[in-house]
Image (cartoon, rainbow, N blue to C red; front, side, top):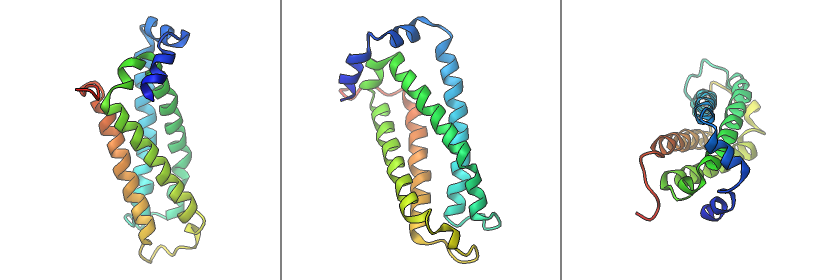
Length: 164
């Protein structure tokens, strides 16, 4: 599927503009890194507290970081799409990119699980009690999945295509 999308956009004006503009790639890299810092920086604190660590921090207070997490995700989404447009044929067949996208999808499913099962009842939890198992699962899954996204993203220049 990614190859079909890549073939469709390879000659698009946006792809040609990104390829022809020498300064755009470094700007995208810097913005992507800044977004990643916001996204992961906030999630690490939120998820570790949700998992039951740092009990001195009020659980709900850590969720004040969510706007930064969403801004970081938005920056990464926009720059990630522009990266793909900038070199669609390379990204479409890159195994690291494919795994990264699968992990981002899993992270989205994990976030849905949080909003369906945890968010509606989190305000009723007593901080002195142990964190419910579902919350620990969601928190550790989030930390694991986003760590995998980070590793796969870092490996993109070093891993090859899915065909060998």
